[in-house]
Length: 281
Image 1 (tube, rainbow, N blue to C red):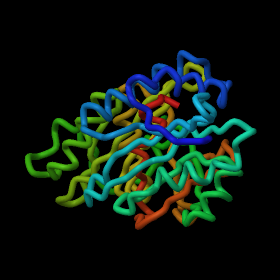
Image 2: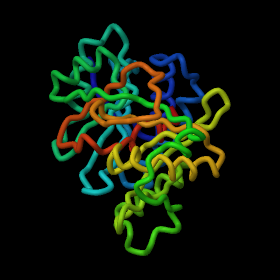
Image 3: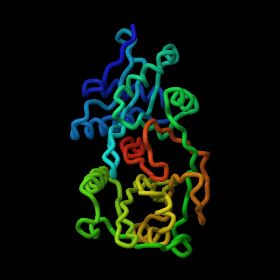
Image 4: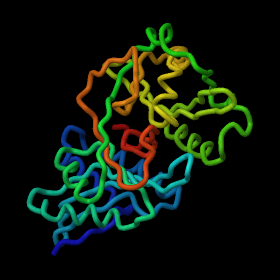
């Protein structure tokens, strides 16, 4: 008999063990830390669960993480599906796990890192697939030759009322999680940008997690580059729609696809509630 149960505090270790089995390129310690971090976030924000475990009788045979969040501008509820693994003996039941995870139609559902098999299954369940590029910018170069449409402000220098209360809450949450925030000021409007900083071959690299549009970032690469260079970050990566015109970038990674079920603004970069943040993936 197969049944699906929620990942509660007593099942965190079980979830981490399943994830380590399904994704052996990461060790058990990585998954234990990530699941604990995600659980703490959900507990502090009154979210019911961070995912599901599939049981065959009492044997854990599958896991799916669910990262809840909201759109910083509209308030729309979001749920990111991540790190999905089912033992080969029970793969036939995998679609049921996804259907159970998406039972609430008041959410917009996302999958920012789907496998080839997941892409096909997600499409059958109503997801749209977006083709995009994950671009890399060398900031010493773009600091000289990038576009310069507006001004970059440290987040603590944004004028009072320049950001909505929901935007401030989202920024504060992500800064507590170790992310960096700033604002691009165009005319009289402040556009928040959230980044995380990781190390690539021991070189700091910022990744854009949120921006009101990829074009806003592209149009302000010169001041943004100088802002990040002053903070010791020489590289920037950003996922952009294929139709955004970008100069001074290279495309060193394979084609990037993400999937959405529900209403989505295609030009907005919004990976605030992705595994990048909560699992440090």
